[in-house]
Length: 65
Image (cartoon, rainbow, N blue to C red; front, side):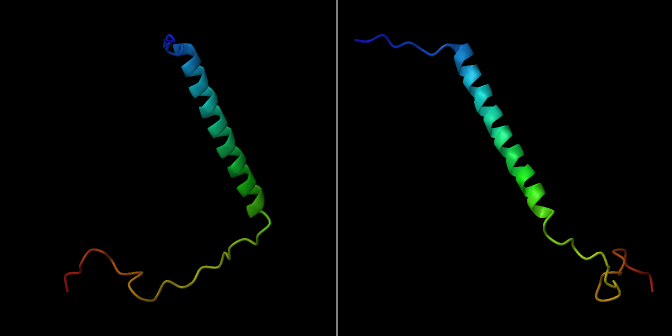
């Protein structure tokens, strides 16, 4: 029967750290790509619409009329 050897603890920790570094790097590259991609699109309009319709300006506190 072959001996069942457990992997060394430092090797397991090294693999976990390397995997986390790869995931963080991939996520960072993905966000960098999205940041560069969004610059090509036109910006959102900055004009604000009037907020005088509906309940947009109603107070959440009931009035004592």
